[in-house]
Image (cartoon, rainbow, N blue to C red):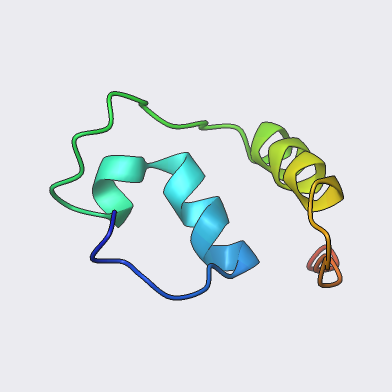
Length: 62
C-alpha cells in the first residue's frame, strides 16, 4: 500500500475496492473487495462526504 503513494483518483479507488490484491499486488489485505458496482459507488460517495475539501464526484458514463 505504501508503494502506491500519491493521491487516489475516483477510478483508482473504484478499481482497488473491486479487487485490492489485483490492483496492488503484494498487499496483505484480507479484504476480498466489493464486486458490485453500485455498492462501490455508494461507499465512494460516503467517503466523499467525510472530506474537508471534496473534489466533485464523477458523473455516470452514458
